[in-house]
Image (cartoon, rainbow, N blue to C red; front, side, top):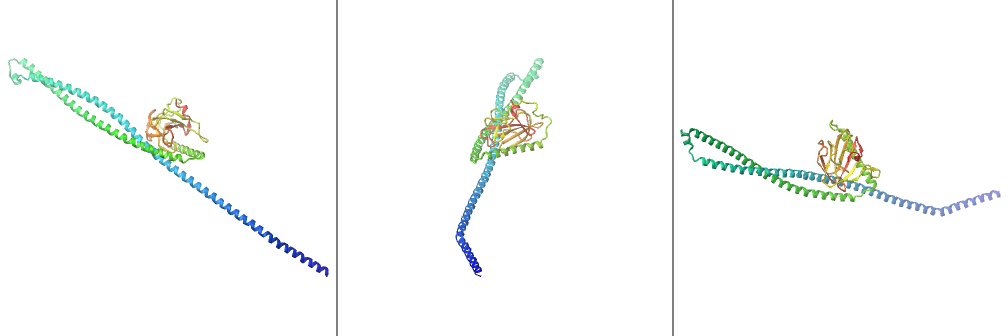
Length: 394
């Protein structure tokens, strides 16, 4: 019995000790765990705040990139409008200059003709005056008296014949004189009209020159804005890749709708026999590095602005318009899958469907499409594959 009680009391004591230990443990450990839990929550809040800030920064950067791309897109459209405005004015000036040359030649010809007619008129006046004096001298005789005189019939017959000859000659010279006067009047009128036309052409040229300066100024402002929208190397590479893809797609579409003409024999037999489209300095050669892994698929020839760009061989115009990255572009089909293209022109002189002959002017050198220095980008392709122009032109 005593053993039982002792065991029971020992058990109770142990239970109390354990309970007390547990209570003490709870009393001491709960504040530590609470403090640790509070620290974790604070760290989580800080991390969430940092993540939120990062997400906001990313969203802001994406928004900035979107705005920048949108602004560049708008500026590129504005550049296209500037290039087309310059092309329109330049084409008008080129036409006016052609008309000026033609009109000046007409005026020179009319001046010479007017001078010749004036000399002919003076000569005819002198001849008529001489005939009139001769008629007046012979007119002292009474013509009716001669007719009625039967004494010298042979002399009378000769005199009558002489009168008739003089009258016929005088009538002929009078007719010629009247024709000369009429022609001289016509030439003088046309001469005056051409002079007035020349003056109007010069006036139009001044207006177009003024418009050209305004368009070029606007283009310079657009390019300045574009240059401030700097692109990273990767963005620049993507931009050039996109422009190259646009060109390839355009050429593929042209090849798909192309109907080869029988008389267009291609360029296969013309290696090193063709002339370059424009005289200038070779700024970039075929196959050299352009950006990243991209290489030049043609050549860039720098040349003075407004210099004539000539087609390398006869053919048909397939494309004549503005293309992003290439500006005002002309593509010529030479037959048998051969094409040549000429980019960054100031203006295009030919339209789609026009037939062109070797060496014929098709455009004027420019800076369209954002080119920093005036020149022409030139490619030769066969069934879509870019060929080295140096193997064809000399």
